[in-house]
Image (cartoon, rainbow, N blue to C red; front, side):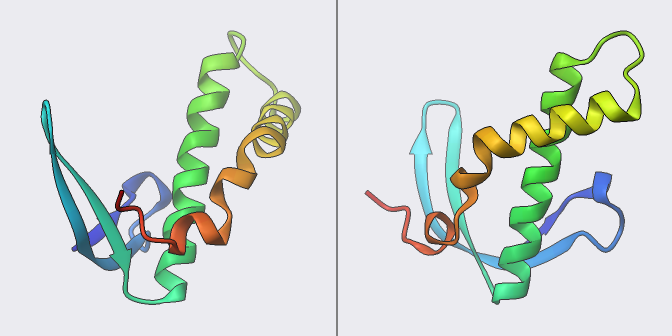
Length: 95
């Protein structure tokens, strides 16, 4: 499978494969294993960028300044970047 993150541009494409699949109430939850460290790193950075963007939208005023957006992004990183440690992404996610 290819993980695409269009909001990051056409080159935000990360190859991987379905490593596990679990049925849940509304469908399926899957785990993706990426084909190499470069794809894993890109996917991790892409997810962080998307989460930072969402965080900024949730906390922004009517028209935030670039400085306010940068402060919000730094706040998100200080609170959540540790959730994206290398170990969290390479360790098997199966119960």
